[in-house]
Structure formats: C-alpha cells, structure tokens
Length: 516
Image 1 (spheres, rainbow, N blue to C red):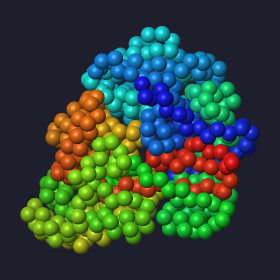
Image 2 (image 1 turned 90 degrees about the vertical axis):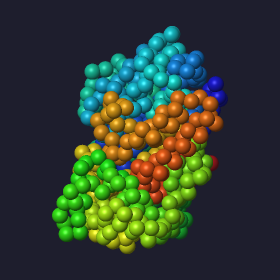
Image 3 (image 1 turned 90 degrees about the horizontal axis):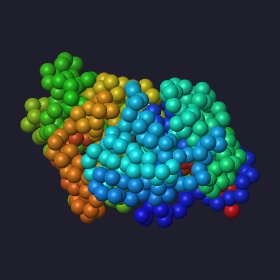
Image 4 (image 1 turned 45 degrees about the vertical axis):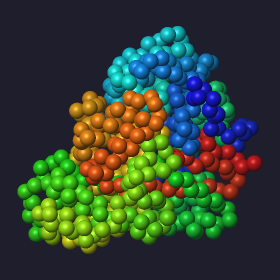
C-alpha cells in the first residue's frame, strides 16, 4: 500500500531546545480530542494524540499509528498497526484501543461538530491480532482512510467512563503523540512537555506553549514583542509590517478552507429577514433558487480578494483548491452581474429586495468583519437593506447551531484531504447521519447526495473524481451555499525558527525546530 511508503513530517533535530511558544487564532473549547471537530481543539489534540492515518503538511495521507492499510473487498479494510508504540503512561497501544477509539465518538452527545460523521459507516471492528484490525463498513467506502485520518486514538484504560468535561482537569489526556499535556488555562494557554519516550522522531523543543489569541491585534502584538515565537493567521494589514521586521519571517500557504455564505432554507421565515419596512415577509425568500442565485451574482468575489483580503484569498466556486482531487475546472467563480441579480429578485417577487442582517465571526477568518461589510455593501446595490452583526466565534457558532440566523458567513476545510469527505461532513443531516442533530447549512437535495454518495463508494479514481465534479455542479446550479473564496493561510515566525506551513492552516509544536 502506498500509504506505507510516505515519510514522517517531523524535522530531524537533536533534542535540547528549551521552549517554543506559538499563538493560535481559534479558541480551545474542549480538551477531549473526540468531542468537537473545531480548529483550536484539533491544534492542541494533535500534539498529544495521533490518528491511525496521518495527513502531511500538503494534505496527503501518510502512515500514523497504522503502518499500512488496504481494502480486502469493497466493504472490508485491513489495518496494520505499528508495533512497540506506547501511550505516555507507558501502556502499549494495541488493537483493543483502536476498537474503543472508533466506537467512542458515537457515544458523545451535544457535540457542536461531531466526529461521528467519520465513524458512522463502520459497522464492525474486528481484532485479528494485537497489531491487526479488520474494519467492515455499511457501504462501499473508498475514502475510509481519509475518515480515519480525522479520528484520534485514545487509551481505553485511561479514558473509559470519562465525560468530555473530565478532560479539562487533565484526566484522559494520555496519548501516543510527541508531546504530553501539562496545564490548561482556559482562554489563555495550553502547556505541553516533550514525550521523551515517543516512538517516532523526537521533537526539537522540551516544552511547547500554545497561546490562545483569537484577537488579531493581540496576536500580532505578541509576535512583535517576542511573547510568542510564531503565530497562525497574520492579518493582511500587518503582513507588510511583519515582513519589514528583520527579526521576523512571514510564510503563506494556499489552504483548503472555503469561506462561504449560508442562506437559511429550512425555516418558514428566515431569521432576521423582513420586508423593507421591518414587517414579516410571510415566507422565506431563500427557499427560492432565484433569490439565492441573485445574491451570488451580486457578490464581486475578486474585489473581496483584492481589496478586503489584500490578496490573501482565491476567488472560487469550488469547495477545494485547483490542486486538489475533485476540483471542477468547468465551474469558475460566479461573475459579478448586479443587473441580472435585480431581474432575478423581481422575477421572484422582490423587486426592491428586502431587509436582512448579515452575521459573521470577527475573530476566525482573515478580515472576517470587513468581508461581511463588503458583502453587505454589494447587496445594497441590488436594493437590499442590510445590517451587519459580527461577534466572537464562540458566541457566533452557538447561534448558528441553534439555527437562529438567516444569512451568515462561515468556513469549512478539506482537512481529511478529500473533497467528498469535506462535502459529506459539511452537509450531512439527521436523515443521513444519526449522529448529526442539525445541518447548519440547511441545504439538502437528492440531486446532490446521489453523485456524492456514489463518489464516496467508488474506488476507481477517475470515476470518483467525475462524480465529485458532478456534485459540485449540482451544488452550484441549486445555489446550496454561496462560496466566495479559499483562504490563503499566513504564518509568522522569529528568524532562527523553522516552521512548516500546512494546507489545513494549522501549526504544531512538533513541526517547529531551530533553523540550521
């Protein structure tokens, strides 16, 4: 299996460097590595825990705790585990921990971003021997290795019976990874120490401190003052200033993070959407594809990229970059056609548009508040009355998960390295995923699911890619969401420190080392 041949991402260094401190833009809401699939949580978890199949900085599958993997038939996979791997308490990592770890996500309730979407198709995990497991799936699933890359392996002995909240006290934080948990100060930092018994290449630093800095100005200030050695998500307005500092270096990396707008197509009355006099419309305009298409045509994506993002984005209609499997070259970004947008609104019965509030986070994506303001201005040009409300991601996502918003901006990445996995996890809902209580995108169409499900099951790459491209076309034609751009990730580090930019916009302690 090709997966067995990929190389480790670790930078080979002699141990002994003291401490590496880096600032992240996403909050850490849970230390349970299987509770909520959110960027801040994954960032900390990956330093301590590992998946069976890992993802390289460029988004390619490579061996993790599994040495190799192969399909035995269209519904059965054999996974060979590494030998002599130990958890940080000295206990061995075995097939029994795999069985436990793959079953646990389905037992966790009230997750705002469940990992159950990656395990729901696994119907049986059979222990062949202590270092071999056989997985059976409910349907043919060519992308099972991609799913497995998203699930961290836990120690059954140390975590069985624990609730997610118990992890915040340090219980259960015993992984196989290169760093061990030391301390968590909510909203401030997570402190880690090197696992000297780690099975792989030893990380360079004795200690890693992950600083939680969702405020962009605070993150930049920490970088400039030397409070941290590196940061994720340098604001576009500060890139030139940091580049001008001879003690610092800026890195960029095209990412898989698609930023898009969601139109509530579920509620009979879309929240925060009224007529221009503030009275109820009596129906949800976003249920009409003409309205959704009008909004898409009203947005000038290239202006957003050039002026608001200052080049730190790529205008898109696809959910993945042009370099990724499944990209549809026949789907360029929707053109900016405000006059056509006005005609579509008139045809739908809204000749003067309507009034709406645009919601967005103000601390999660590059210039997210400014993006919301820019889109609002564009919608006013087709007659809409707009207001903008931005708030911290934690508050924002809570409202999103309760379907309280009618029109909002959010992002989603292809962290598992596959477009089909990205779209399934993005749009799955209670009817096709028992572990998903809601679909916050509210788009659900049999025309979309038919080619996507077929693609996920197809082992032949050419056929699978064609099915993914068909899925993208359906999503575009039905205007399920309004993609605007793919974010370009920005990183900064002090000279003398080598970091590895990643397509998933993450930075890990084990990727950093003193420059040679």
